[in-house]
Length: 174
Image (cartoon, rainbow, N blue to C red; front, side, top):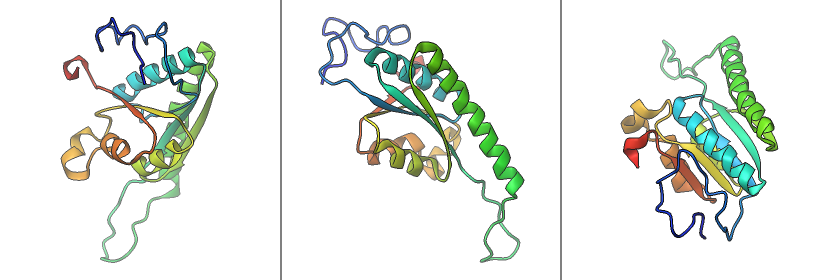
């Protein structure tokens, strides 16, 4: 699969241009773009939308609400998260995906918003099965907890049955 012109080194113009004039043997028609609202995921959103525009693909923008864990004073008791807290998190997620959907529509890209509750990597993997490509960033909100909990991006890359385009957090990661 060739996604870039042979005469251009990979990464030279990646900020300004998604090789729209390259010949591509495989075009992605359904792209999944996970977002957590971080700067890193916003960068991946831009890449995903440009790829969708170039290949005339549709996108699904997904935000996964991870319900926070509140330990209970009694061992063995299930944790309780107030319904109001979950609703606030869902509303914030809806705002995130709707912002990306609006950007997509301005670009002429068909987009659908999805907000689900669960573990981010597991839900992204589940939704990826109905798509041709996942475009996501690194070092989102889970960056500090990578050593303890593992990276969402890393788990998605390892377990998703479709290609995953990982957009680095900054220029120093080229």
